[in-house]
Length: 149
Image (cartoon, rainbow, N blue to C red):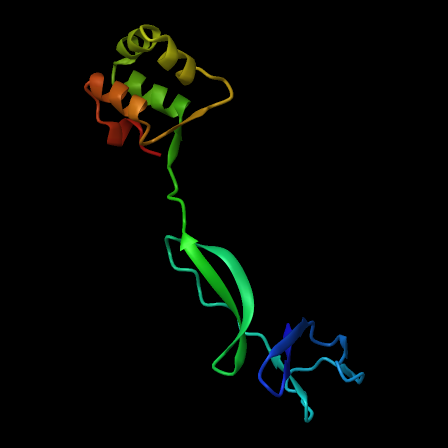
């Protein structure tokens, strides 16, 4: 993409390279990087700076930065990614540890935990889910191992 820039260094428009461009003065030109006349010029738009880890783009704009048109991002903190693991994987790890009978007894003793664990439309559990961590810990197992993604 190219930016149409006036002689006051204001960006007037973004245009696709090779397209026809109607200038504000009525002239028509083919959009080519480096084209200029007394009133206007075209320059390739530079990409935005990379988004740092832990940030996400809230909005973007086209601005002149150091005399060059560039996309500029407004950043915000990204929501942390919560890791999850398939419940069937957790179950197999509990079975392998010889604790499935204890886990089943704990789940059936609490109807809410039972309903959450066996909900068919939720096949995963977050690795840091407090209830899952509590259950695994109560079984004498290591949540870092049993709930690993």
